[in-house]
Amino acid sequence: MKVKKLVLVILGGLIPLGFLLYPAGYAVLTGCQPTYTPPELTPVPDYNKDLFTFPKFNLPEAKAPGSVSLTVVNIIPEYKDTLNQEYAGGAKMSTGGSMTKDMFKVFKSFAGSAGEDIEAQLVAKGMTTEGPFTLSEVTYPDKKGADLTVIINVIFDIQYTDQKALGSAQFVGGKYGQLYSGNMSVGIKVYYYMLEPLSEEKMWIKKLDLGVQDSTYGYALGQEQYVSGTQWVSDGCGGGYNQTNYAWRNTNSFIYDQRPKIFSDILKTAYPQVMKTAWNYFDVNEMLNLKMKSREIRERKRY
Image (cartoon, one colour):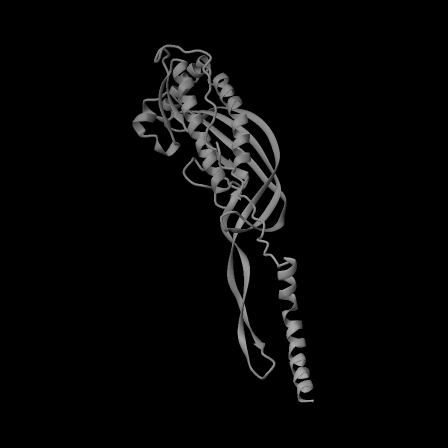
């Protein structure tokens, strides 16, 4: 009888233990151990290649330097957009404008290349040049010694529509971000000016309308974790603890942004036409006639 009771006691302990050990034993015998699947990481697209190079303009002809009696101040192209009424002049970005900081860097590179190519055009036509300068950099002696000032101004109409959030992602490198997409249209009008250098009076204006380009863009804003609050969690026995809750929020930094690349490609396509039009517009004979009018303005204003 004692032996029988002992067996029952042992069985009573083994049966619950068997239930507890069954999952582990089953996993060992069958090899079906639970596996951890890491989250799929999203690669960061590279939209920064070849943003700041523009095709050189091939000069159709070249005269001897200084063979034409014209001295011209060459101004680096400036821009304004439809949300900014003052030209940035390559010095600052328009506050609240529709051009992002990286898009402004693209334009600054475009303006630098255009300024050098306009300089080369004027010299190839036999003129003497001063510059390229920003308008604020031109000194009084440079203005007084020049017959004309040439400027190219670019007006952009940049619109963003149908912007929407696509969800969040974990990127290669451990970054977390919120994905967005939208439509972007870029309208471009280029104005060519000739000014009397001292008064900066406009003597001649011509325009090139490059139309509107539509594109679809995407970008990702970086995200960070922050403490969103705390709450009391009961342990069911009259006690408990404060639980800290976390959430994600967007930062002001881009993980990637496709818009500067789109903007750069649009300007690259437009660049040869802008330069060819400048070559045709800045005609030597027409500029020699304007030189005489420039002298009349100085005499009238007594410079």
